Length: 138
Image (cartoon, rainbow, N blue to C red; front, side, top):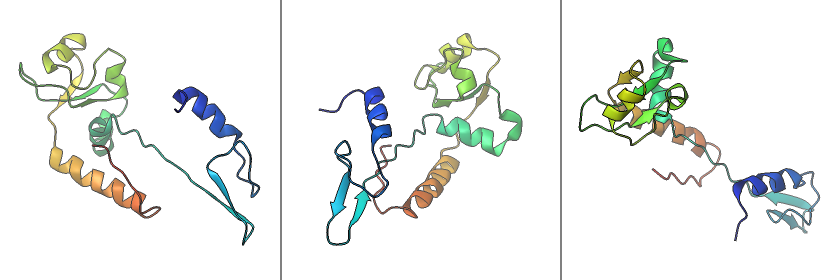
């Protein structure tokens, strides 16, 4: 069973990838016929603030400001927040009314799912330039 994330990160730093197999590196495999080693790399891309980041990317005036992607109203939930809004306790999936109470001066932006889908596809295409194995989770 894997150890907690913190200890795995520390262990990953100890792995040697200088062409010699390390006993500490279970990901390194020696290829005896050629004398080379292949290394398996797993990259996790956290896109938790993705919608808010797209909004900040497309409108430079929003950068560094508390952005909440949600419709205003009693039945709306927060789709995403910028890190600036998170510092006030606003989180994804919370009711938009509660988010507005926590930080009334935040900038609410209605979601544009068509644009987010296009940007997501572009990110995935960049990843596929480097590997055929891309496993999106959501």
